[in-house]
Image (cartoon, rainbow, N blue to C red):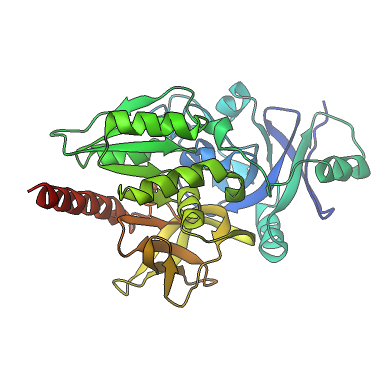
Length: 382
């Protein structure tokens, strides 16, 4: 076996390192994550499916891996690149070490690589296709050609690959106040947990069900709200889910979407989406909340965005709406809401378990929206 491993980018740039985790080859979109903690959340977040994640923090793995902190049932990243993995685990909560878990799940990794140089390269050139190669004797040309023959993120429909196969229920903690149906487009475990802590019973449904089957189940459950989760892939491929959301908006069922769900809600009200050159990733993205005037530090992982008017209000077939949140780094729309219908969304992660927690209040906003719709329903019946 070769003692070398290579991270190869679409533009021909090659970085040399050492094999780490599983040995072999893997392909995905190269992105970097800026968190000094929370690598387990990143690894098990289905939104990172088909992505090779480069960790900017040099020392990774010191807390190992444990069952309690998993966001899903497996590691989803296509590959993992670190500079200096910890040789030992230093947490009493650890069930296993990081490299052992990567090997067990067949995740190809690379270590002893200049992650700062890779980050600067991706920061300047944008996210791009990449591959990790170890244990094979390939020429530079062969590796670059293999990367350029791999699939692109544009046009990819990935939610069905990461969604639950069967529906499941997350019960409310304490007194049950509301019932919510959540469409699993790549949902993280922290999301229904945050809702359950607020007295919400969450019915999680698979994304590969037909619109008719989903509507039938929603009518059977009769929820107080509908949630669109985060997830991987290109939102332009999600036509059937967009049609479902339009049907629910027509019924005035409260809708809350995050990340991929934000992009789908945006499409449902009439906006197109586009691929960002760099994307937004990491746990330190500044977002302006236009309602409060506060700047919130938020966790992101998305490569697409809405073509919505940044300067304020817009009109839809469901009445007027407004842009509620804007990224202060590049002016990208990060949140929208309808004014005459109970629906809103944000393009980042209020459930971020490793932090920051500035946006956690959005779950309370969802509760308030459902409370208000219940009052309106009671008044109309009275």
